[in-house]
Every structure is written in C-alpha cells, then in structure tokens.
Amino acid sequence: MKRFSVFAVAREAMRQHNGWGRTWSNPEPKKSYEVIIVGAGGHGLATAYYLGKNFGITNVAVIEKGWLGGGNTGRNTTIIRSNYLQDPSAALYEKSRSLYENLSQDLNYNLMFSPRGCMMLAQTQHEMRGYKRTAHANSLQGVKTEFIGPERVKKLCPIMNIDGPRYPVLGALWQPRAGSARHDAVAWGYARACSEMGMHILQKTEVTGITKDSGCVTGVETSRGHIRCKKLGMVVAGHASVVAEMAGFRLPIESVPLQALVSEPIKPCMDVVVMANTVHGYMSQSDKGEMVIGGGTDGYNAYTQRGSFHHLEETVRALIETFPMISRLKMLRHWGGIVDVTGDRSPILSKTPLGNTFINCGWGTGGFKAIPGSGWGFAELMAKGESPLTAEFGLDRFRAGRFVDESVAAGVAH
Image (cartoon, rainbow, N blue to C red; front, side):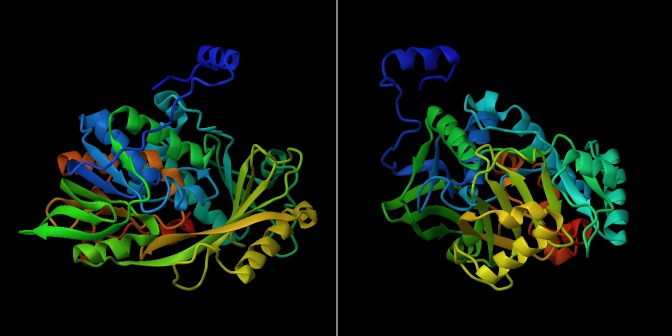
C-alpha cells in the first residue's frame, strides 16, 4: 500500500491519479481468526490497530453489519477534549487526546485534527463553582485547563453574547489543546493501517449468533457463514445490548437517539469549540464553513438514527440566546445516532462472563473523542487481560457500587 507524501501526490498528479490503489482491501472471510472484533467503527478499528501495533496480533477480523464507519463514528459532532473531573476518566480521555495530536503522522493519513481549543461555558453560579473545581482537579491530573472570565470568553469567541437575558456567561472552563478532527478520516485512517498489517475488514457481514462451549466463545455465526475465533471483542456502540444478548448476558445500559445538525456554510466566524451545558447545546465551525450543532439525547429509548424535531428546535432555540447570529442561518442537514448510556455516564471496557470475550460500550454521547485511547486500552485488555486505562471501567463496578460518575461531575455526558 502506497504511503501518502508530497512526492506521491505530485507523481500521481502527473499521471491523472491512476496509480492510487484501494485504501483498504475487501477480502473473503477466513474460517478462523485469532481475534474477531464485532463493529468497524472508530473504537473497533482502533482496537484492531493497537492489537497489531502494540502486541503483534494481526490475525484479526473486524466484522461490520453495514459499511465502515457508518454508525456513530460518522454521526457525531467531532469534539475532542479531556477536561473530565474523575481521575479514571481524565486519564483515559487525556491519553486519547494526546494520541490524536500525532495520529495523522502515525497512520500516514490526514485526520484534519484541529487543536483549536474548547470552552465549557459557566452560565450559573453552580456551574462556575463546578468548573473551578474541575480546573483544580485537572491540574493535579496533568491535564492543562484553566477557568477564564467572561472578558476572555468574549475575546476567544467574539460572536458570542455574554450578557444573555436568561443565562449570562460568567466564565468558562478552557482547554486550549482540545479541538476537533474529521470523523470519517479517523475510521478510514485506522482501516487503512489495519489492512496494511494484513487484518481483514469484513463489511456487509451481519453477526446473527455467537457459538459457545464450556463458558467460552468459539466463534460467530454471520450472514457469510460461521467464523471461529480464540478471542472476541464486542464494539458495536448502540447495539451492544443486542450482541450481548446473543452471547447470553445482559448489560446495565439503555439505548437512546442523539441528534445533531449543520447549517449552511458561512465565512469563518468561530475558531473554537463552545459547549453550553446549562442550555444543553454545543457548537463549532467546520472547515467547510458549516456551523456544527448538537445537544442532549432524546428522552426515550429507541434505535432510530433520525431523532425528533422538537428536541432539535429546543437545542437551536437555546443556542440562539448565546449566539444571536445563527438565527439567520438555514439548516443544511440533520442526522441522529444511537448511543448506549450507563447509569454513571461512563463507558464499559471490560471482561465479560464468557472467559475469552470482552466488551467496549456505554460511551454515551462522548465516544468520538475517546477513540484512540479506547482502542489503546481495550487492545491491552484483550491481549494481556488487564490495562491501567480500563481498570476502573469494568462491569463489576455496578455490582460493587464503584461508579465513575461523570454525569454529576460534568453536568453533561459529552
């Protein structure tokens, strides 16, 4: 597989770009693999990549019911940050953010990572106290954040109205090295690297059953036949409970729609990411000029990838108070994803009741920012049976009451 470089681009430009090959292969499935990962989203592909890079395990199949990156990886608002309060969360997300910094070079694929900075607005006295506490905790964790006043907020984002009628801006938790990346490119970059290592990415291959013997998984039934494996990783985002049921155990999660939208493209006017948790909306501007807008999950359980218009209206109405200029914009497109939410709003990266089976799920609305760190830690868990990054996110925490409660800490599960 060819490496991308300025010389390769110039060479292909001279011959009408006819020399580029496939970005990743499209193989027929083998009868067995050392590891099967169900789910070819960002987390599944990152797990496969770090299994190969860090542990030399390349006899891997990544099985996807639809197309690569067609689930939540391609249905999010691309925010990357690590300013979490709880120590296990901060460690996991900071590992991910630091990996994003050089991931384009590691994968030889432009992920369009933009460390433009992220502000989480404090619009009540309670939020201001909470974010100051988080800034102090981040300092102890080695995560660079600071609490800034309204004047600095206005300077960083001039289009913002900091004297809102209901929720004036009292300050913000500012992480200067947070930002965003191209969501599709993250999946494509990992897929290309996995394929180059000889791994099989099996698209349009639905898992219909899981075969077991003596408390361990022996393989999976798919729409393309039975495939055996020595280890199984379940990384299927909104359908984690469905796949877990096939394996014979239940998960403490619920599945809900999360929706977002983009406006028509406009000239550059906002070069930071802004999250307003009191009104529950967040916004950034894409490289194409679109205003990328998201909010909270819908208030009902469902497996729809569309969402509800009344919730969309609520999010936009709230953001217009802080960003009056967006009231004049037209919506370009609108989409939804299915997210798995746990009781403590933290993920599950864990062994399962089946001896050779592992599960990665429950990221709620914050999965994209965690992709590299999740893949790093989950690969280590699958290869070695334990990982410092995943130790506090096991299934047993719900039975033992060892919650990593980010819903209380952050006020929102992003």
